[in-house]
Length: 462
Image 1 (cartoon, rainbow, N blue to C red):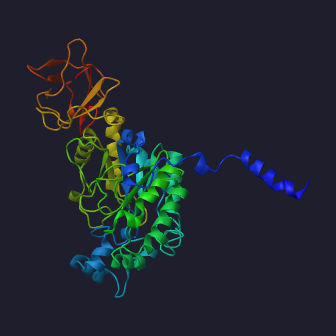
Image 2 (image 1 turned 120 degrees about the vertical axis):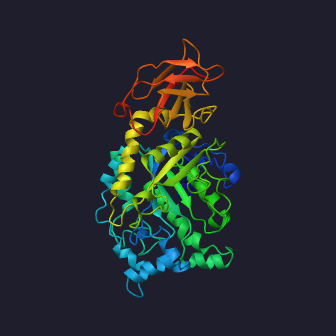
Image 3 (image 1 turned 180 degrees about the horizontal axis):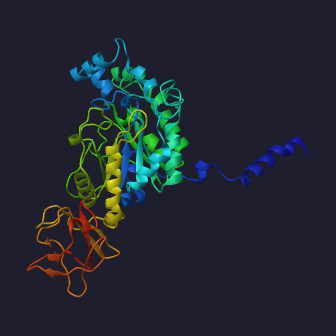
């Protein structure tokens, strides 16, 4: 073969090769909010309804006051935090000195996974990095301030990912704080009014790509914009890659915290604010991220029993949220050594017990034409259109044994009413105008299907 023939043969051979990935998969989303906001949210998220949030990090070592301990102590110099350090640690003790004390000694990813499965949750979200900057994986971009180099000397993210995917049917999600309180590059960028972009280019963006490629999260829960706009973070550029090219492009869901001004406006689903629970229907998919501990997201040694929401209050949060079209993301804070404290485990298992009976009225449901009842307080509605089902979830068992519902319009001979967990058809009569009265079964407290709220399945009502 003559050398002069090679270029032509090479060109011909190249024509036979499949095109590279970008050509084969044309970008579907442009790096603009107009394009990204048009992405349809993967269906699994709306069907899931309930997830567990886990706030764990170096802040779990002092476990005092708040997961914002470092900020309140060093930046704000709030008296109770300053006094706590003076009373308990030697002079000159730095926040970084908490790192080696974050041992995760009793962290058992399989045990965590089993508890989350028992809770009835359908997804989890782990804080891979909070505003303190400590990463729970061995980040190449967080040298000596990560869980592999310091403290546990373990890849926490990987261990939990493997346990969740091997032992449960839950989706695996990760929280990631965009900014870091005291990172010198961020502080320098901030002093330039964010005209400089050293921090996102050298730290934040490489870490996000690393997280997605290594652990394939199905929820990416962004937080902490540090007052910087989305173009500083290149949020739209990253999200375009996430939706078009990443290994989770077809299944990943994201929230709305991608830069100052984006919350409740741009992104996948809306969070709007911490503990957001509007009590009415929203036109966009949303999530109520809230805490079992009323005051903190991280574990607090100084918390008292009255600081924790009761299971009755948590069930009410779930029911209200789902009836108004939201998902509930319920937060726990493990201890520094990796224990999910008894109070958190009890609440999670109680929720799972409730969902075993009433999950039919929660999972894969849709909002109904009315979110709550007009006659009886604490009655909330969900529906399954194809099955012609409406669920009336009531949080107080009426002393009379009769439940008055002002919203459903029933039809004699077609409408059937059942109590979930009981199963037998119940007697009902129509009210004079709209609504029905349901005669509940005569059960003692211990005979009822559950203890903290009940659901009626109404067939063929409008």
